[in-house]
Length: 184
Image 1: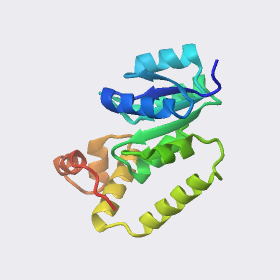
Image 2: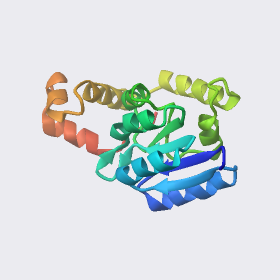
Image 3: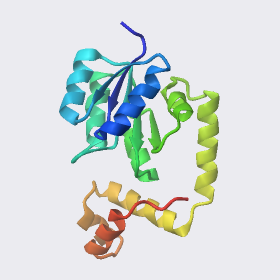
Image 4: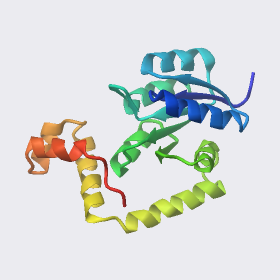
């Protein structure tokens, strides 16, 4: 058995295939699950040391799957990937058991650094520094997106309650959420 067993949980088959091939080159023994039930089954049966989890799995959320994975794999290093990064979901992911949180598209070196068990890894420190610098230079649109995500997380994803808390019409909030997040 390999000491670098990796479970990739990703519903996008093309992206999962790219990740799989990319990480095989670095000595990982990888398996791919495309949905939550097969991911949990593989986690229970195979006991991977590393998990790369997509935040959006079809109609499911990787955030919902995180606590179950953490319970069955307490020693595994779990990295959450998302195409819709926000501070609110990053905080929520870490609270629910993720060891790291990365935005797609992700570079191989950043992914490998996040799979390292040590948070003092040089690449991880450089990445953390660049995240801190980018937070300081957020555009007003990005700040609004972050605020919306924070309020939405505070209300458990309930759009109506979040809209009321922000004194905004529910449909306006839905339109804002349907757009891609603004880059820094």
